[in-house]
Length: 161
Image 1: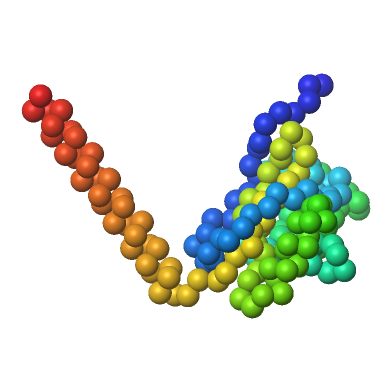
Image 2 (image 1 turned 45 degrees about the vertical axis):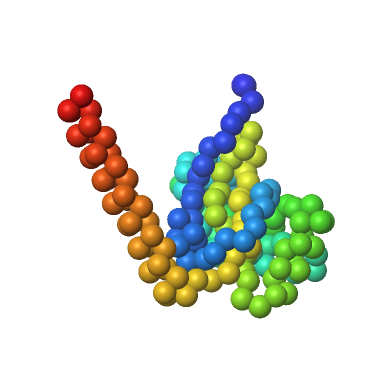
């Protein structure tokens, strides 16, 4: 069987970019059990309540929901168990330093397979206030309206020519 190539996205935490200011991102490997990998390959996972913590020089991913494998038996995994993240020592120290500051957290942004190996993109993030969220929504809406106006003007120009 040929080795898997490329990047296959399993789950994305779209709400994270809405709720947090992303300051720094890292790519980490995941320590998984067999049925977890099969469940991920079926495209089933949720990062919504997930976060990472640093304990004794190790990084743990918590609150991520990987449902039980449907054809699994008594060997199935717990859906919301803690999973160890694989990072370089320098990256772990950087994360620990960032978490020691106030108001910062580590959230998962995306879960994917890269060349056949399960990876998670995590980010050091600062929570947004309600007015920040409204401001971001307003900016996005203004950008959309400007794009619509520009495309309508281009269509009118093309019709006149």
